[in-house]
Image (spheres, rainbow, N blue to C red):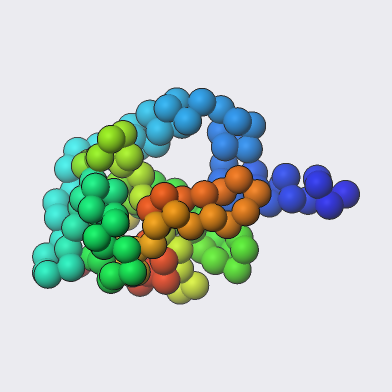
Length: 143
């Protein structure tokens, strides 16, 4: 019973491709197609692109970053967090989808938003869900 419940939660939170162990390159290719073109970099001293967040993650870890991107996936209420994936048309070593967490209001899928939050590296939430780069406790604006 517990195993079935955990599987259902994981399936809802992270999508069927992860839950069924699909090839990660295939999953990334599918996600990349949903955000077409360059979104444009946010303004300000803490502004970075998704590609820069991955490339400079060691330097940015623990700091507040501002990223402008298109919302490609929204999942609410998993592990007491809301999960939002954004893309801006940039990438670093094949990483172009950035996961953000929030306890606040969620933007709709397809919206172009500015995300402000603290970048973290090597976050392990257990059950095989590890994020080399994630932006936590974000707020969203439509700037």
